[in-house]
Length: 413
Image (cartoon, rainbow, N blue to C red; front, side, top):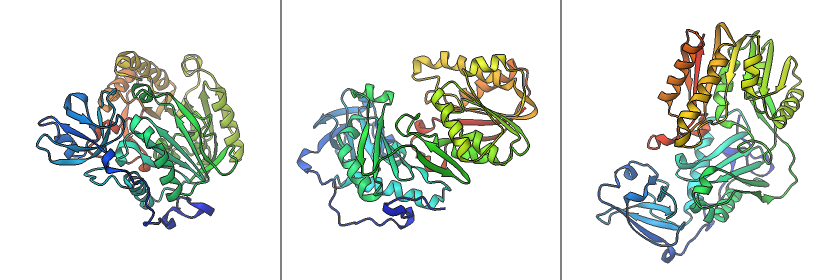
């Protein structure tokens, strides 16, 4: 099924772009210059988008503005932008780009075109995935006719008008909402920024679909950009394993895993989330799909697991990021370990446990060590039967391993 984008619901594959539009034309005299120290260009040439402060030999230009990047031998490498306040001093745009004219337009167009071949059965898709699409500091998600953008860096903040203009020309969505609240903005010297960048029609709850399941999402008040698009493939995986099974969905948010499970024949689903608004959305989404046997509990997950006596055929655990920075690693790891231990105790023998972490600072190896420790504490013999990271539209660059923030492990208990 094609992603519906463009005015009047034109399928994404049919969206036409006027190649003659002269967009994002800049004065080359205003483009700054960065030279790297000797032997500091290797990772950049391989496609990595970041250069830290110790790798910069010289910088001339406007802080946050575009720069031409040269190696120590004065050979041009590409184009990026600099923030002298950030430890990540230089962020590259694209790979081996040399022409600043219409650069943002070209990169966003390329990013959107990549998604055309994925045949994602949803009208909710990530169109721009930051560094992985050569657009460090920019996220763009599409929810039917609404675009939500996240800007996390000074360079992208300066380019905001060009970003909106490019999206308007390429997608034609009547609504663009900015939801820039990431921790990185503080590190970049920016305040949080929420608001409508384009609003040609009134917007309330937005209805999206994934295969045969529908959701109402709130792009303004909802978590992240409104929905957890990155777990789409795991929701689809779960559909094939839930028939006649009881399911416990922990940190359920708006019920993504829960509704897919009910739609695919689960006998009963219990969803737990501490957020009253999340539980309200789950009730709305359950009614929207005409589903029954959905128990929705507004409670802290630790408290629920401590007092719960029931065991389930399948337990899904997708908690928020407990590790926000490197200094939180050990404390956050302890929280993950305890929550996974408690959750494992609620899985029936020969049941399935799906556990995720979206903490950027927790790598896959350490996460699996935590799961091992949790299983030993819970006295459960587990076997890994499936692993997954990100949904297809969250495609990643092989050169940017830091982009692997989401880890999901499925275990047989």
